[in-house]
Amino acid sequence: MRIAVPAESDKNETRVAATPETVKKFKALGAEVIVQSGAGTASGFADADYVAAGASIAESAAGAVDNAEIVLRVRRPSAAEVAGAARGAAVVAIVDPFGHEKELQQLAASGVAAFAMELMPRITRAQAMDVLSSQANIAGYRAVIDAAAEYGRAIPMMMTAAGTVPAAKFFVMGVGVAGLQAIATARRLGAIVSATDVRPATKEQVESLGAKFIAVENDEFRQAETGGGYAKEMSPEYQAAQAELVSAHIAKQDIVVTTALIPGRPAPKLISAAMARSMRAGSVIVDLAAERGGNCELTKPGEIVIDSGVKIVGAVNLAGRLPATASSLYAKNLLAFVETLISKETKTLAIDWQDELVKATALTRDGAVIDPRFAPKA
Ligand code: NAD
Image (cartoon, rainbow, N blue to C red; front, side, top):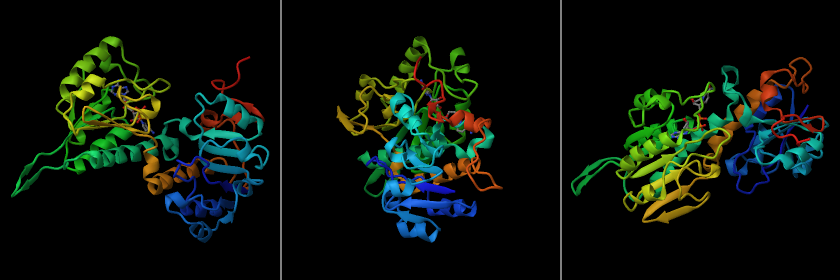
């Protein structure tokens, strides 16, 4: 069984889908692993490290993918990039199918079975495969590091002979995986931290990290969490009350990290232009929701906007800014999933199409898009 690890074709992608550590584990499962030369360079893994772990190196992507039964990627490959793979090969990646139905159909037509890791159900059995959590955790950490670097003042309180430096006030909006890590990181830097979310469960989590919880805690708030643990889209009335509370609070903050998302919807707009401008010059907003439309009205994805002296950072692929750590965790997520696709007896690809993890993540099979959400409309 051949497992291919081609280099990422997106020049901005610094992560890699397998590390020398996971290559060793795949070898132990009886697989042959072929890594494209340079695939791990941006993450700090040299070709020689992969060879030492038992992989062979291919000079080109086509050479790596040739006859592979499993192709591991960070981002969705094009159909051409998997053209040489074995018929029915499993392509495992963050496929990002929403709005990319055409690319998905082309991938299906190439005969591979594409699995979207980001659609993995958040159940106990799949915890080790949860790429959303592994990458959001790093993004939350990196957002605080970036915010601190952009901020022209110190974060912790300093008492010096030349005077006292006050601690920075940090406000985290959206307390999922990324937000919790942002709170913990800001606290470690010595900031005074507050946070908000619409899900009641987050109150205790915020307080257990030593931060202050701020939210409109009405009846709608008490019912804002879906059965799946995600936030609902809030009513215009709730949003207005939330905006009033936030606008009074935000004017007194030095750094704001926003991470608020609603599955399948544009990111909620939590910071109006006026609210951002009410912060004092030199303040920083890092918007982790930039790629989904942004939580701040002034956000531009991939850019730092300076408005009234306030820096608004439109954060994109923050996990990729910590490529070695992000790749290590991502590669382990893939290993945990791929193990379920391999037969221990025959040591070959043996996809159980009835497995709930397979059902939730499989997008293409036998030439067709099998997830009705992305299939061509009749
Ligand atoms: P997410 O990325 O979907 O959203 C980030 C946060 O934004 C969420 O906490 C959400 O409540 C919040 N938000 C949405 N609208 C908002 C608004 N208008 N104002 C303020 N905040 C708003 O979230 P996530 O990090 O993917 O986590 C979602 C849930 O999944 C959480 O309950 C988390 O604990 C849970 N989870 C479970 C598992 C597991 O069981 N294996 C793993 C990871 C996360």
